[in-house]
Length: 402
Ligand code: FEO
Image 1: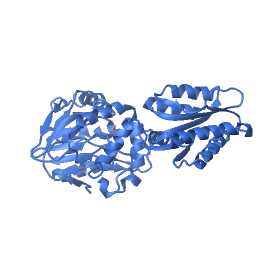
Image 2 (image 1 turned 90 degrees about the vertical axis):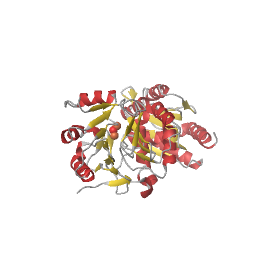
Image 3 (image 1 turned 135 degrees about the vertical axis):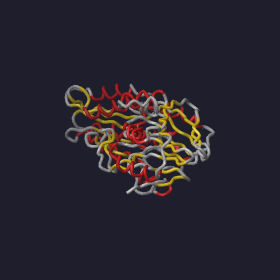
Image 4 (image 1 turned 45 degrees about the vertical axis):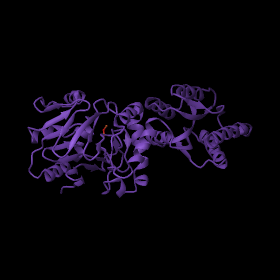
């Protein structure tokens, strides 16, 4: 059975949802699946905007056949050449041999890296700012390189103000029958997953997101159609504002994320004692994570959200406890910056964790150590109580007063 939705007169969502997938990109846990969105414009000319992942191919073709209702497909626009969106391009060309495949130099370069089909006769190369008129609808191509792949482009539909935004503004989480942001409780159902998606998938490329904002400045955007998750037509300013903050690495909230590694509970004990003191000092937004237990993508997401970080871990093999080291490497790779930081190391006979954490944070930009770090010897003792109090005082002052 087809499963489509008209999102604007003669523009249809024709995508699919995958709730069987466990790991997005074989990396990121998906608790509620993911949607692969594709849009079909029915005008004097017909245009399909991106395809979908192989996992939803059957549903996809039922959708397209229903909407086309026997018409030919004139254009396939490739905004993004990552396989979760280009899995059906060859199929489109086989079914519609005369279709014009619209992309830029980099899109076709990637297409020929992934696939073997000879598409020279179908290719329609576009440049930044080119327009494609379909009849009543008109698409303008806005290149968005490295958001988050080099070939990415967006299409701005000029008559209705609809932005087909590739992965931008997308989220983990399948659609639940509510396609539009105003049909669902977006903040409760999707926002945390949208942040996790942004931080881990797009996060490294904040400057490139900002560059796209500059290109779109002045354009009236009435609807945002991402390749993942709900279509925005109500809270456009809100999601734009969040994207602006996230891409400038500005925390959404004052709060403290404490993430720790702990082999036998001793480092955990210090962190929980500190969290207790922070709570008593009036800090409301406190998040505590065991790096051995929680997938790094969730911790990274909260690191994007909050202003203050506490990292704590033991020495391991004369270095830093592996899961913490892994997380800090991911933070470096994603370009996390501009946070206030406190550190707690732990060691029994050779202090290496604290030094390594200091080194790792020094590889990130503008990570300010707000107080003297604590180096625990096996287990925090009464005689280090004042150090912990000083740490809690400094963090609370910074969160509540600065
Ligand atoms: Fe949804 Fe970058 O692929």
